[in-house]
Amino acid sequence: MPTKQSNLRLFLISALHESGGGFLHRLLDGHPSLKVYPFEMQLGTNESVNGLRGYCFKPQYRWPKFIKDQKNFNSLHRSIIDREVKWYLKQRSMSKFASFNLQISHADWIKDFRKRLSHKKDRISRASIVEAYLLSFFANWKNRSASKTEKAVAGHCPIVLFDTEEIFHDFPKAKIVHIIRHPVSTYLDTKLRLKGLSAEEFCLIWNLCALISFYYQTKFPDQFLVVRYENLTANKKKTLKSICDFFEIPFSQKVLQLSWNNSKLETIKPFGGVPIVTSQYNSSIRRQAAKKVKDKIEFLTTSSRSLYNY
Image (tube, rainbow, N blue to C red; front, side, top):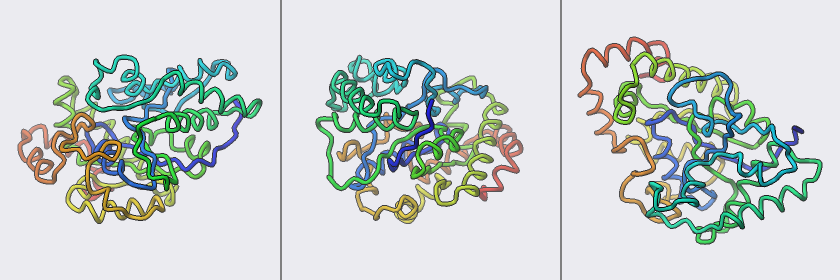
């Protein structure tokens, strides 16, 4: 597939599960400079695998790979998994987001997507497909609370940090914020959902995320930023100001409040894996951890934790 790049300003939130990615997503939702995707931005395709295995390495969380006939635009749109949005549009009553009013015609979205790509003719690339997919979505989201001053598209893409090089190649103006959380807290909250997850498997993946994010922040200091979840909860305004500075957008008081489509949320559910997004909860869950479990996780993550002063 051609390697044409996109000038779209794409801001992505990366995070291991139960690390605060959904929390930051919902805080940025109300920023007047951003078009924020309504649910997780799951752009991966079934071909988006590269040998990584584990509970978090699902293809929808990766950067897409297109191997089908790129002139079959319906097939291209269908190949992007985007499970949360597409399941909502297909079976809203069965979606965990059923109570949220997302007004968009799937047919109109696809029609607009085809139109945008048809203008590209022989210049279709992965970047142009992703750009057409996102821009056609926002153009057809009928009840979106738009500020008309948006300068970038933003979304939460779990573990997308593993595809950083490809993302920055396709979208040279892209930026990624990766949220990291203390491994003991992250493991205990993840265990609430994945009962059989062993400390050994979890620590292997946590270490990998910690090391790769540290590497990319060093390699791409203007495009990749690592933020500690603990800083986001303890010093929300200061941390969000630094994130806005990183994105090169003005700080807005609206980011201090959880929201969906610029409507205030009283709780993070069903958007986040961290059940209570406060410093008190984060500290208490670590204190409540069984000593044997806590000691094992801290031992297995010793070197990686030191990178982030944990």
